[in-house]
Image (tube, rainbow, N blue to C red; front, side):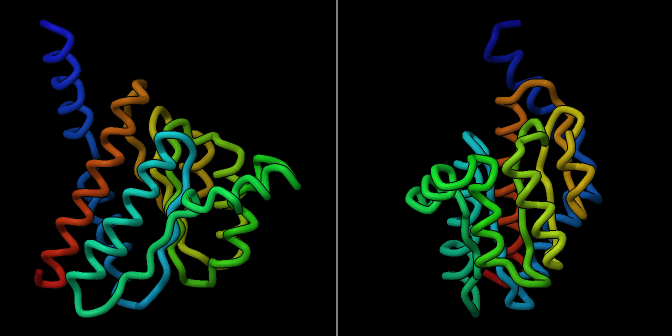
Length: 186
């Protein structure tokens, strides 16, 4: 089997292993935030930062523009001056907590994306979001790491391949987008 076929075959197996009830809960949790005018905040590092930005764009513009009301979605990864100020003036592990403290209110939804589930800045952000009364959702891989344990809800992509984990996280974004468009009737 060639490398292309092998990668795609493995990726399909990883997607098929996702627990459908958890994926449905993820869709329902985001739909509930939208229906209740709650803010949804995304965060992550590296490839997960790109997924956070993509997710926020799909929700804010894609769903918000198609639906009867705007979707309050943002990615804490998108304000580079704020990120670098927090990193420079405190520590890199604090780049999200200052933003969580500013923007997140009780009942808001914080979606933390970390392939390993062990990124210190993601863990600190989720711990603070939990203390503030937010609903926290972790998207992880491997064995879920600490994130799967501290987030109120989580989906663990059971793979040891970071690229496949990141692929599935973006598939979850597009799955949520597609389901929400159906839910709101567009």
